[in-house]
Image (cartoon, rainbow, N blue to C red):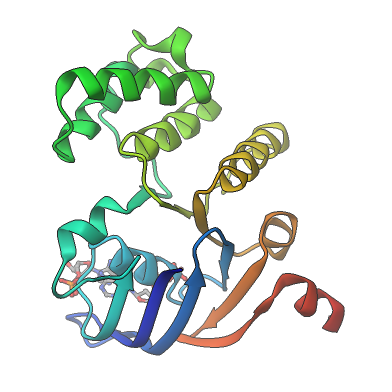
Length: 226
Ligand code: ADP
Ligand code: ADP
């Protein structure tokens, strides 16, 4: 099954900047996929379009068979997004951040509470459920972002520069967690500008530069050629 299919995708921002100049990309279900590229290459724009936060200019995108133009709500439900910057309400408690996120997907309160507990336990945050989120450590905030993204059991988890500015110990424990949920069946796409991160985690890689895909291959094939 195809998790993501992107055809001739273009994005020109209102100021005329062409961030994506015709991208084609396929990601298989179950894959662990890296989108690698320097700052300004178009990584955030691409995942913004995948998660319906940014409108595309032209091209076709489908997510687990749901076309973004015809079936946006179904496409959105397939995706959990972990943005680069902490963007939850810093004055809200941990548990309510995750429960409320479930509410956005129309999950009923009782089920939302059950799912939130499961996600918080998985990310070792259950003890912190009543903590106001601004009092969490940096590593805990990152884990909360992941817990929140998983509450509606998405088939695809997208992480934007997941370990930017994160120390080695936290990075390693995040890697371990991502490997585990990928093994359990969640498709994962991450953006990074570190080849090392991609190399450690991902089976396939696409390299994007100036709004174009310049390389798309298996990670081991790419490494063999370097
Ligand atoms: P869209 O086409 O998706 O509606 P816009 O072109 O309206 O996006 O851009 C959203 C806002 O971000 C605008 O106010 C734009 O000026 C601003 N912006 C401009 N350049 C950048 C940039 N390099 N990075 C982030 N935001 C930018
Ligand atoms: P990356 O995530 O690889 O760093 P982005 O997708 O954020 O790249 O940006 C791609 C290009 O689009 C950059 O030149 C960036 O400045 C520009 N850009 C991003 N957001 C906006 C926006 N809202 N308005 C105008 N230009 C933008």
